[in-house]
Image 1 (cartoon, each protein chain N blue to C red):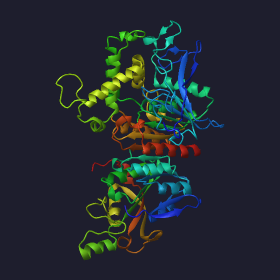
Image 2: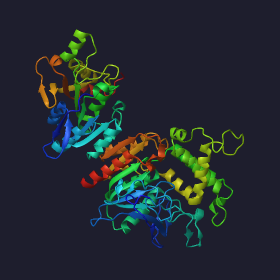
Image 3: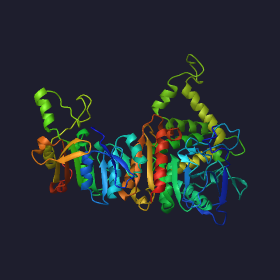
Image 4: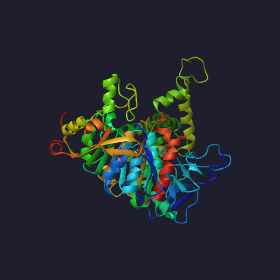
Length: 228
Length: 379
């Protein structure tokens, strides 16, 4: 799923992790000492960074056995091998402060199920995704009539795992449908490793990715298990 | 035998305790003693006594987990691939203890032991023991070794049941738990296979209500029980890969009931071999202990059983294990999550079925050694 990010030496001087640009933004959103669940935590870099920098209690779920091995090698004690498409049944309601889903929602078979599960389990949800309405993507489709490929979406259409791509506009609508309340929207330009800036004008056109901070809205609290 | 990574020659030791009138109260309500428990140790206990790892074995295992009991021994201990210098349980760093179970027949008190009151083997007068009782006896061993807190308890299959029982019974005394290919309660299917094995033993005419010591033993029954067990320890795929439909020492079907297929020959060999090293009554008692195992039962729910647990968990299952399927390991992890106990869970992809925990595996080795290294350092 896109680039592996840049190598970062954390402030403790000893720990080196690989972070995506959006990881740096997410780190700033996390409160000191909170309980954090990273869904699709990969090799545990974000969790380790949060553990070192924010003294969080890090937890993760990851589909790949090799990634779990890497997490254990990093000394992460709460990582679990599992499939996000099965939901988060292990976790009691509101047992996590921040549930994080970075650059993963587009590969899920049932994104609506998971986002609702995230809002059930977490006090807040932090979701990042590539914005499919970013202008170079529009341009490739419009000008060349070809399936778009970008740095963030580098795969051919026939081998991509990205089955549920979305845009900033569509994601807003999705959150409403899911009964989630949007606390914060952070549209981002991430032109290269370590480089990122927030996009204030025409974000759906100019941002290559976005981070949404969400919580369960009143509608979801009133009706947690709709029939659709 | 590679001298560099073997613990070398080891001697099985034992302790005896619960001598009357200070018998041990068993879960079934009976007081019982004296109890002898066999064990082996590898490596050195640190001066702070904080590097002890207790290894717990499966149904037919014994205290001999690593190295060789004598120079002529052909096979090393049952988990020699994991225990030794530079291995997952690195004996240069850790003091590794492997304890046998009560009810067994490998140096610990069991149905084949002599009842001091009658001077004859207990046979079916031996009390019913449970996983809880096995662990209670091991606790005496750990006291005897002067260890307040174990760095880790580890086991696969029934050994995993004991590891789980340890952290529930003695939460203050375990820092890290590694239950492998196990469950918090034996499934109906598991009980069913155990029952077929017991019926095979009990319907052997030589069994004689368990009173066969000094006479001919129920060989056929025990061998059949072992054959059934072996089928459940392998996956369909690994059996197919190992044997397929290959014929044994012949090129055409015999059209009789002698051995045609390699898989038949293998199972017969495994069954016959087992009879020489295991006691049929011990098989009955230990398999029954597994059936009775239900960690949640005295507490209501599994998370309540874990409510006082202090240990961090590394829970491992194997993708092709249909006897202790992965969902049963996930239930353990779920209960940990619910009470806030720290737990790593991973399912290792393998075709080798339940027996995978006994086989050489880079994944298993690196998971365990990393978990121990980080767990030792963490508060």
